[in-house]
Length: 209
Image (cartoon, rainbow, N blue to C red; front, top):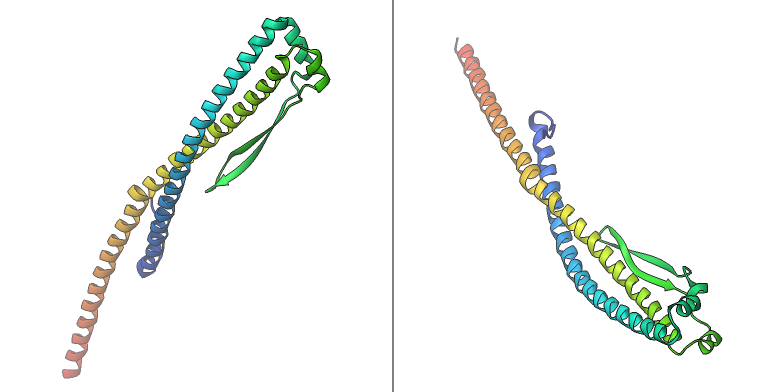
């Protein structure tokens, strides 16, 4: 891709400025890659932690559901939670990491069984309700960790592509253009010196006559 540098001597400072800008851009992208790689590793660990927590919470929810169903039957269990069905809400807070906007935290709001309802139902219904809410919260935390990791990884790939484009194409192209320009300028300067010398010689010959 042509840089459209000004012709003649004005092109040299123009190219030097853009070479310096490209080199600085590479430094910034390398720094960004390092910071994003560090965040990627942290989020990868966090994702695995939240995944294990979610799995444990689901196991507990299944365990208490089974107990509740054994005591009262599946119909009674469904009726016990019917009035709270579909009323959970998840609020997501966001964070900006090196220009990458990604989910940072999930806050779950869900209705709980009232004390009188717990007392009226079988002994496993209350713990089952609590276990399912904890599983929902754990699932939301894991979803946030997974989404954040994907966002960081996507930006890492993009930063790597931009760095390679500057490193392999933009910067070599500018440097090659600068070398070609400097060769042309050297040639012009040699021609100018020859013309000046020739003119001086002609002037000297005229003075002798």
